[in-house]
Image 1 (tube, rainbow, N blue to C red):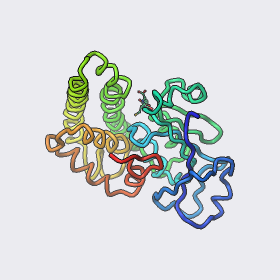
Image 2: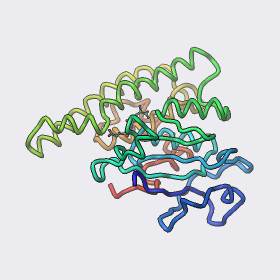
Image 3: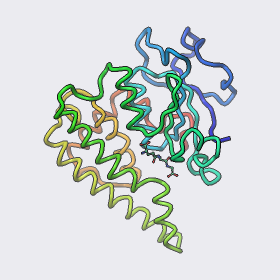
Length: 267
Ligand SMILES: N[C@@H](CCC(=O)N[C@@H](CS)C(=O)NCC(=O)O)C(=O)O
């Protein structure tokens, strides 16, 4: 099995929305995930179920979970893809058919299978425009995308699991493997956050670009979670730290937090 199936819902009582979910995946393993309450009348997906393949600690999956919550798409099947167990379930042939990059996340929505978190989030924003994750002004949109690129092009790829594993493979001693992995991860997080801080300091209001949540915030929160995992001192990035604290308290972000996912493990 490439993934373990869970489903997400927000109330104990079965409501009309529950009736829309296909029942085939509902097993004893199902778990209740507390999220934000959806707006009355908002349906997860007009054409059927929304399904997310995710790993609790994956920052790219975390981005998509936040975006789904912001869009009120809080009822979806959660398929846990364990990136470490048995060499990584992302390599299982049935999963690779869904996601040829052998990565999470993958989202099934509107009858489409989508991969690449930024493409997924932009699809959600284009098909469900409210609340909007990209500003109306073209320059502000460019700034939002610039911030997203710092995270998704410059930072996350070099800190990805497969890259960290490769770094470790160059060293023989377990202690050295761990030390070099940490050094590598911290180096690129710091480099990226220095750039992000310089840009965001010029554009931030309550959030990264002005006072409304944008895609830049959706990308930032998971990257800060990742930085904290790698013990990066966030006091060097005061604007980022302030916004991250603000985002932590937002229900769409807190419900998407790794610790609140069905496949969360003790840290
Ligand atoms: N550009 C991709 C990156 C996805 C990605 O790297 N996912 C990581 C977890 S955050 C992964 O699945 N890594 C598995 C591996 O390295 O084997 C996206 O934005 O969706």
